[in-house]
Image (spheres, rainbow, N blue to C red):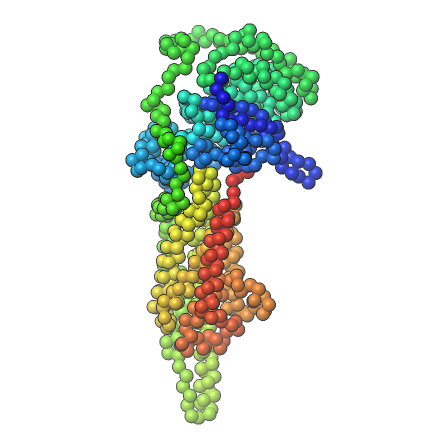
Length: 636
């Protein structure tokens, strides 16, 4: 008998409540031998997916332990990323990348030490193994449900994990696709090198599994061979299992299995051979005692003779001749061409790629997605080209005044007073125009910044969490986002500064002016990136970012003066104020600065201080993004 490679000992997960605790899983104890194919079944909400998360380390148990190859994963070290594969219910592939591109990118992120040719061979072998080699160049968005499930499985097989956890990989598939998927999963355990646990609602293909684990209300109700399932639960066919479970309380099923498990497990074939139990063996097994079950007595169900051969109808087609393997009661050998397993690198040679290597892989992938997203690309071009034109449109009436502003003081007192009054009116209009144009640029750049990064992390959070589970370093992920956004911020700010300055004729040194626009854009982009890292959905991140940008104008004090206390409280957090004030400081040697200062009710801060405050916003935003990415956002 092969030694158990996965052991669950009194595994429990309790959620504390106001009055009582909610038991998601209670006292799950089981041993799964090496190379076994295990089905985890049970009614909805019974804890099947939760059990996989506890095994994978995505959730911490309240009590109990998980042991893998003899080591306690809680105290002796968790799984290495290449040891375990986990296929969740949600999509873990990028819609705009092809099947092959998704596999190649995932391999570069998860497994190091491979040459380019080795990576290519491994990707091609995985495509063959999951049956996607003929559609390798198709984008994921055009794949069917079954093809997406095969891709998700292929992403996990790239590292040849010893333990593969599959959560509802057959859900929603048509009967043929479901049959193909279960057959594929079973083939992955050939040779005893991989253990596969598959959560499923379907009871159609239980005969293909080595053992079946039945959960009921978070309790283990059965874990034994599929051939004995109907005998134990006193039902005629597996399809009657769920109604039968509902007739008793979960604790009663759990106590019953604890008493009878030994006898049933002795009938379980520990290896891959599918030996049918003899009727005499079945007679040695006892049903759960009715006195042990808490509710009303079990119905008197007389199970059919086990494995009774059913005669086909008279008009049924003649069956194909049995092969030699069938006659001897053995499984047909696996077709190497049908399920070609990728060459497995030596375990001592495996390692997760460095953060630097992951950074370049992620950055290349992000730019590929950027240029593949046609609608997003056109939106960026519209923002870059359109917003500066919008600023200039509002400045056309004021151009002559900005260019011809002067102060002439004639000798006559009446004329002097008249000229002073006209100059004051002109200065007020020009000062308001200059201040407004500067603030308009700043506010539009904050809007662009929100568009840049509000959805950047939140929109792909589930994929990121899956890649982090596979060994992706959060720092490399955030760094790739910063590098990508840096280019966008640079282009947006440069074009805004050059276009508006050229058309409107703003005086002053263009370099510090561009630096201020760049910093206010970068500050808001970084802060919205931090918001994106904590948001649960992309829509939530966009909404919060829009509110954040919306408060920039009124709280900056550039339009209406704020109360002194409120101004000092809010100003450190308002990037728009520092961008507006810093840009106006670049006009200090011109008459524009004087007229703006004469009509402004908000004091202007020194340019150097503005620059450093905006730089601190950038650092804070990136720091928040790193913290947000380190925290788990795995769906519950």
